Length: 294
Length: 154
Image (cartoon, chains in turn green, blue):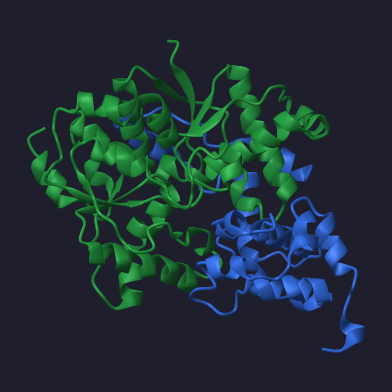
């Protein structure tokens, strides 16, 4: 199949974001693309940048070498994986000296990067290669009764240089555009660009949950049926840790959390099982009821 | 603060790290600090103040502090800096120096151990592969020893 991509899952998705993976694979298939996880992909390197930037560089380069060997472009579901792989691909493509230094170390594990493959976030690919118009044309179950709040997160957009300024991080709109293609409304809310706080969860949980809580309070005030996101770690914060966030805030949240391709998939005719609708801790009961018979 | 407890060379050490070079262009406008979601709710973390501390040479106070580990890596500071300084990269440079001096935050010690063992941050067990298979998702390898070997090289 010509339209094949190396699917980069990272650490979190295989265990805690299977509904994201499943729905992304199914949605891509509807548009003739095959997303294939590579057996030799491992950690992207992002999590240890604070400890060793060199380690991050080598781990990211190793993954790029795996994709290059397979002759495939990379699509990442996790925003942090997407950003660090795109950064390192850019650095290695531009700096011959850096590339040969990195390749000396990669040689110890029999890997080599010559021409780093293109790296994109899955949602960016959807926006650029499929686009809202093509989605609109294929919608079979319009979501006109639904209102969603988009959480863009940070590394889907930033650092913007790594993504060739694909979208202005001060005024992101791509995910909202994709969601509106289903007929759904996208709600505005204050601070919609803010960080989930996830990177600090292991460092200072109270602070991390407070950052998430501040934002979820704003989301809640906008009254959406669910918050929609494109990063498994944002979901770890907003879904897996929502109870703790609510306890720290001393208020109820009860906010359903969905990944973008789950919503798109339902509108495009996939079943609630195909998109793993029941796998969230904070399930979207309204969507479950609407798609109960499928 | 006494002058003999300062290390005027600290800023050069930071500037010598990849990503740290731009610190000399900071003109202390505070845009990074205004953009910072951590600073918005926790006064311990103040990017402008941290840059001043580095420039003043308060090496030990910075490297031994709790606050250097509080960056959420959102990159808002980098995107908005009028001088092309990435505070996110500067604080990464500072943390890398702290790590080499034996002051790595324990959370990262744990993460490095997990990566060496499994190649990813969470252990993927056969049980997880069974759950994946049920959903029609590909089986994944549960370890990757190349990661540990590369971390030895870094």
